[in-house]
Length: 124
Image (cartoon, rainbow, N blue to C red):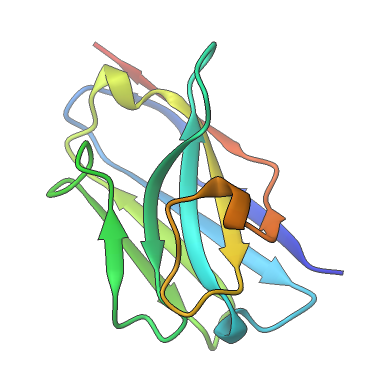
């Protein structure tokens, strides 16, 4: 059984930084593209970032380009999201996700496995 466990969320002031981590157990993540999605209260879940199976290719939502970086360590079965210059509109529950595509997808219906989520709150 594949499990994804996120950590690193919390409360930060606008302009600050957080680093989210996702540890995967049950299967090697080298067979999956990995992604982060987020869901704000009352909003639909939305794409944030994805990284290809080998890590050579990334894709980020326009709203986070230049501020967020996604990375992965296949040896440690982990994926991370470095979030800089955080803004109140980044407040959401952030979810780690795995899909079996090579390059990753923005479509949450392509996701095979989800983590339980970690709360990120950015105060003005």
